[in-house]
Image 1 (cartoon, rainbow, N blue to C red):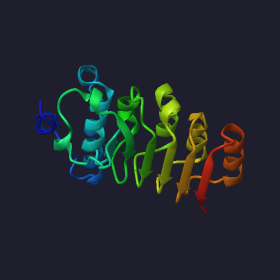
Image 2: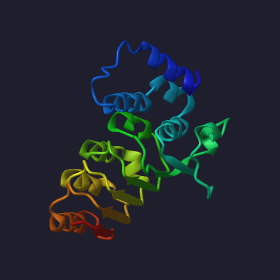
Image 3: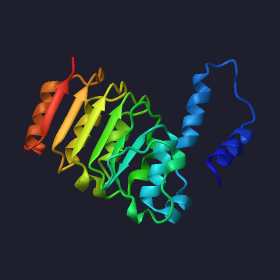
Image 4: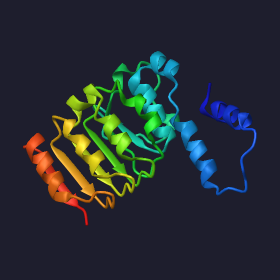
Length: 200
């Protein structure tokens, strides 16, 4: 079924939107629909294809191993066997990804870089969930978290589980309060990490 078909079915099933409420209610509901995991689809097409569909549907970009160009257009996802198209990098700038969609990432094996910039739904739960994926713990080398207002020290500290992380850039995170503690945590857990902070 096409993305439009799924979306129309969801919209038709919505009995009543409380129009007296702020329009944020509608957009949050719609973004939740975009993030919902279809486990049957995940089984049928594999983690890289399903994750690509989810990320692009939510406004993020992906780059596959062996490719220089970023893929942003949902309709340009390559067809055929996804064994040839493994996600190497994710740029979620200005996207609506949220924690309920993170199960899409569990089977990803070759992701080396993740950028989370201006992601309104990213919070500590997302980062803690991300740090639980064993395959991602091995593959992730670089991460950037910028202007994500719901992230606090607890979420950042969870990133110490990415044992091969070489570079971490943190900027404009008002919820992060104790920079000195973060530096100490990462120095102990990941001594070879290049940690760059642009925090108040």
